[in-house]
Length: 478
Image 1: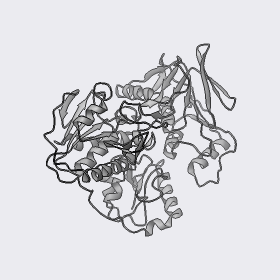
Image 2: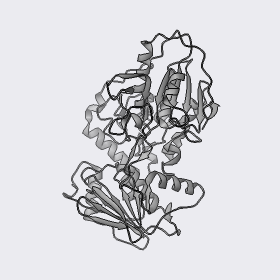
Image 3: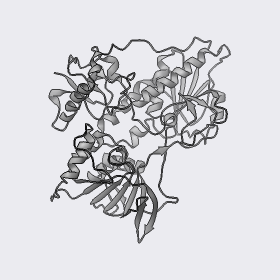
């Protein structure tokens, strides 16, 4: 018997580090790591020790004998992966080593982490592993830490939502203090933090949704707001009454757009009158040959009792493709699902649409594209991604991320590193990658902090100052 990694794998690679057989691929050092949607366990070398099952923070690994019918496709994907990359089996074992420690000093290194989401959590974990005397203060603008894990991740994705447990150990450590309800940039400036702390790590993510249109229009919503409301309503055994009528347009072609479509299909989101949505159209900019969502996201949609169809733009998908998404699209395009009495909701994935305008027309919302298409619906939900919110004292690029080189914040004018200022997570690399991607990102940034501290004489470090920014809590804050 072997084990299989499912589609909601978070890719933080905890499983890779505990596998005694070195049979999980790709590793973070492999070139395929950034390309694959999830990791794979080589069935030819797995010894069924279950170490990876215990290590996986997302609960995404199961024994092949326990797979459901819908999960068996991941066993097939695993076999295909190792058939296509046979060299994966012959790669040398990963070298073992301890993380590089901070240099010894006369006093504790004082670190401020701005933000309390997954990037902050992995950063705190890395910092704690490298110093027994470090003192870390986390500044979070909301009442609890967790970021999008607490708000935007669908209630159906229990494995990913349960990753909130990763916060327990580092945020309960005596070396960590959490201050909630603190808006850095409003109640306290970056300049003030830099004066008070030796190191400031920006982990505030990308919280500003990219919107279509110049001014707000009645009937338009942001995906993050809709999903948060749906999660809150589901916890109370209710549905979120948000939308203006039975038809909805979802602008965007990533996993978040499909999460919104799935939430609507499951009736977690309904009209303000409490009626179900009967039609949802996902308006994606990407072509059908290069969709922006993952296979597991669209697979989840196909499992629902809906009428799912593909609106083609340009060349049709290739049924002979090695890409399972393309084979699925080709099947849907060639054999549309028949409408039945139980399938009351129609979901259409419409690719190749660059939205150019949104306007209110007779109480509804009209959307036009560069391809001369016009869509009209009762509501529009924006799922077009996020950018970081500019903050005084922090240089930003035109792409909406903090100006940095591998985690060191650099001046936009000179390109020189700004002493003591670092960045991690979406604010560092843009709004891409899942929860687990923050682990490697945090390691890279913390390694830069360690290297810089080794080049700094720290005999002038005094007592850690006190502060009264927001609600202080030493350890245990959730």
